[in-house]
Length: 468
Image 1 (cartoon, one colour):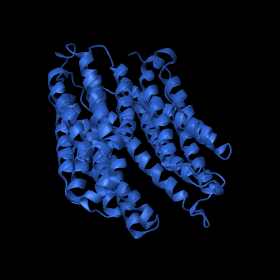
Image 2: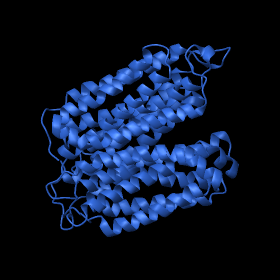
Image 3: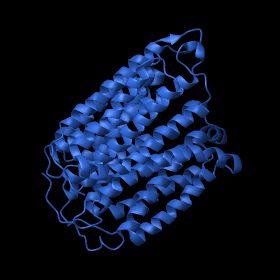
Image 4: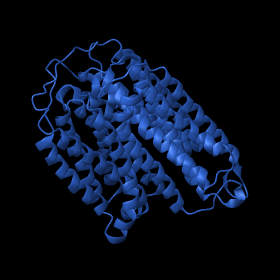
């Protein structure tokens, strides 16, 4: 078991509001930066002369680095304090932005994006910092705001990319966020309290290596599925390696005194948050796969709307806005109904969304309703899951626990996207070249089952209220 430590709170009362604002700006800026990359992808591909397969590493590199680094970054914040680690993450992310902005080859562009992947740790690191802002306060009020800013930033990036690319060179999708990140770093130095645990904590480097190797093998295996298929030797080898490495990781973590991820810290409530994170990530990513295909499919398919990507953007904006608006409500709603009840309620929209789409051939109203439901479920649900982590995990373990929840969300999202995409290729309408509705039914039914798992898990959370 981890050794109990005392947190130095000598500076935690000086600038609490400014600290929350700085953390929100960091999350918003980073999410906006990454949200602008997808619309700019064709321009980036042409600028560096990359093939379609090669340019995909712009996203793959970021995904791998982000998922692998978050647990270690979280544990580093437990040991050295969130302010120091936040500044380190900000420095690495800024270096990645510079590399991407100056890139004249796919190698340098992919390297820049991979370095930016470390910035995925901004949200879990912010949660750790928020937990230490005020003596006697959990910092929950700011958790929803940070998660909301991350969600809204992704939408803002998609909306801003078009006008920005029309007026300026693509380099500015990197230079402008870089300027904001540098100013944010200076504000962190000035306003964020330097809360440091007592000495005696250490990093489980062996566990970090096993976890990193297992996650890389898992994510690479899933990433290669669309091109190689689930039964290819490469995919099977990578998935087998993931099973071996992750099993070794779990065995090691249960045997050492100070593991990278203490699976015993927080008990059942924290395990439940990992399940909710995984399932909400799955449902969210499955939606990002399904909605654009339904919108773009021709009317002759029997289910498609035959509309332009503009409608897809509108629907995803609805999802992002409802997610961003609902996340900050987690803390006040928890005070009203209790932690368990709120977590259960937040999972209901995730179950309802695929049910709405399965209720008949979807029209715009159904798609918009499903988008809003998923936004509410993912925004409110993940914010509340993080609040449960903060309420149940010792102060010296909040960084690693919140980082693990974030990783579970990312892994769930990756699996949800690939499984959904694979199911939609099983049955195709040959005369139109689009997926048959039966594939959507199967994919949505599985998504609904995953959401029910989240609901059942949330209902197993012990009763009780946790104050802010």
